[in-house]
Image (tube, rainbow, N blue to C red; front, top):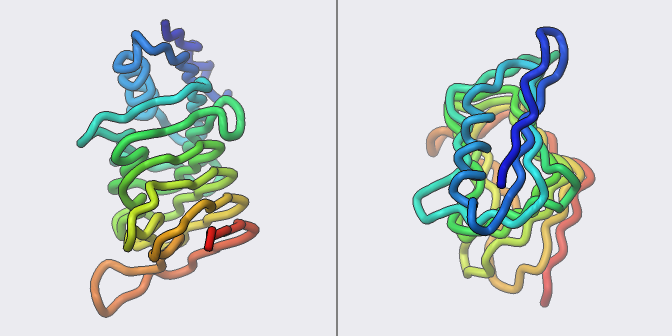
Length: 188
């Protein structure tokens, strides 16, 4: 059963800790979404370790959420690699900025996109092993000022690209992508 850590007083970081359980998977997912929906600059939402299967057409939506440069909104796994996101997609971003996603194991079957209307998104300390589908690009960056660091991309045997730098249209490329210290290993 899920449990919620209360929001902290103003000026402190708050945490939403949601515990997974097989019988309460939808409840846990709803609580994770609720914690993300309520997040304000400086908040830290901690997702309890476990395997979450996101239903087809569903996702953890980060929409209209805007942290600041000094106080990003952080969504983190309880322990690095301890939260496994299975299904079609894990996170979907839209009209958001200054968001950090850290410590997740992504096992999804479609592209993780950072759209042009979302900037200053950081993916850090995550483990990416998507479905091994020919032509599937794993992460596509269309937004500006995106940082992808300290991630692991691995176990790909088909054609496709781990990280694509794209843009909002066919004439513009996203600006200021920071790609650092990520390892990419492809099985041949």
